[in-house]
Length: 177
Length: 177
Image 1: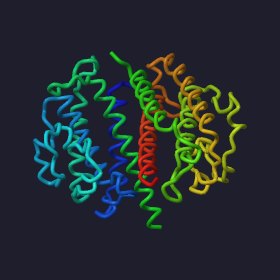
Image 2 (image 1 turned 60 degrees about the horizontal axis):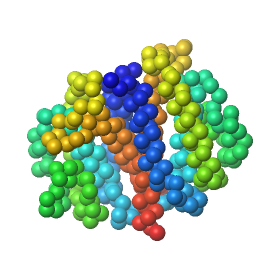
Image 3 (image 1 turned 45 degrees about the vertical axis):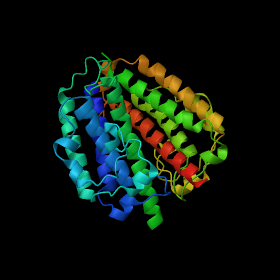
Image 4 (image 1 turned 180 degrees about the vertical axis):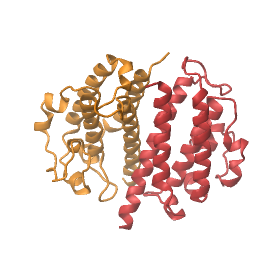
């Protein structure tokens, strides 16, 4: 089994489980939080898709994120950005609980459409990504992250949040029963 | 060039460190805490994580004796009684009902973590001496699929998804404290 297969299968498996767990959720379910400080499913999905976009289109290639290239940002009402934020802020990184709570999650179809376009594009990029030297620096300007560390983040970040989404969906189902 | 096995093992070890950092300071009460009836607690999540690794390494990748049996943990810990439809992964927490999880007498955290470490030590030994070409061999000689390499994907994803669960539960616990 090649490393490329391990990474690709990991991305695919976790993308599919997120879709399966969330495709029938209502807007209220996407916004539900067990406590006011807990991330809701809508935010977790947005964040997971945005980070995959960042990894493959800013850190592993110079293509530019689909978020900007395809103007996905127009369909998502993010909370107002604080002054001097880093580019990663638009992925949901370092959001406060107030920002998470105020995030207007788009309809599930739109959220999944963005996730799917990122997933498809990331998989195409992975096919040709040079994996011979993972210690080389990523393509993100000014970043010292290596390609290996970005791929490590990709293959751990997705299942971390997929697991959280499934756990929250489980809580919602038991609450409704 | 980093190989598939090193990438997976490195990922699993980094994720484990992050999980341990959260759980090592917990009380027995905290590892048994659930945010809602029917949800999994951290004690169960850890049992499932460690036991699954033990099972997969010793039955799917190699045919060795599990640490669970070799070191006497199977006799030491009391699991809920298996049901009539119990599968081979029952003792790893697979197929447990919410009642099974709730009735599970979580062993002292130190013991639980000692078992997890013993399994990881063994996993490291097995994986570092495993010939990478064997990852493409079938797990069961009678069927071409799945291949042994799938074990790496399962263990890597499992480690990250349970880290995600522990982080989620820790956050909810703190918010409700």
